[in-house]
Length: 298
Image 1 (cartoon, helix red, strand yellow):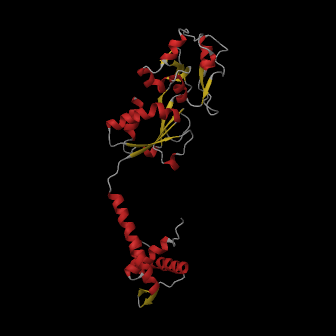
Image 2 (cartoon, rainbow, N blue to C red):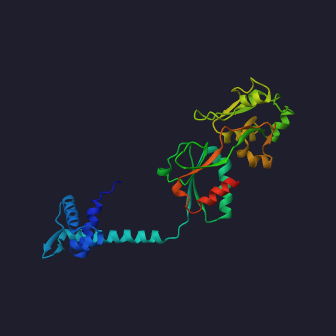
Image 3 (spheres, helix red, strand yellow):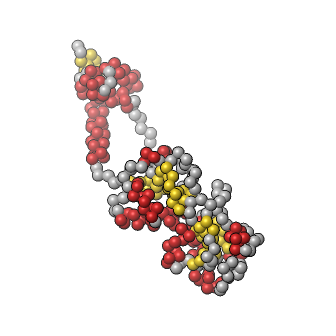
């Protein structure tokens, strides 16, 4: 429901004048001229269609209509002032707004942010999952994890590390497959899990590039499964559907726990490193530097 509110600056000028008993006292309180107070009161009277003050010597006196409005207005302003005071005096925690690419958020960033909170229980994050480009100012973003180093030339960009892709599957699939060889010649092409990086990416290697590097040109064209996120490729591989060209950085926990295994040591580096980006003015925000150091160390 839309609130029917009068012009608030005019209402504030009227309330101050009624309390002070004149325009001079109201002007002193609000840091404006008496003429400005008078103009705002006339503006409010025109809006309401009521006369709010009458003059008596150098003072202004509330009319009957003015008294009725002043009673409610004064109470409302006092409630707003009390609520503001409670908010300003309440203890707050520094909360960092972190913007992350979808697959990076799910498989890499979330576990590291959780580990940092366990080390520093007072730290709080607002984690936003979104594609590039992002609007740092409108979104009040403190830190962005993105792919590449040239997306935000006016901001501070710190390299996070360059990932690589290599063949991964579940232990159960590997056992069913037998020994496919380091070039994966024994893997059916229908069992390959492809990641469609989308039209904005051109430096991320796929299966065709991997097989060409392994000495089997012509293999690995778009057959089998196709997913739209690198994290989903790892999910499919973990479920035993086939072999994904998975990102080592994102699969770290699964490889360590044995949920995924690699079928070949041949790894292809991504075209660019991942980066941490933040506005220069955010450098001194509480907790940001510790967050950056923690992510770079992780």
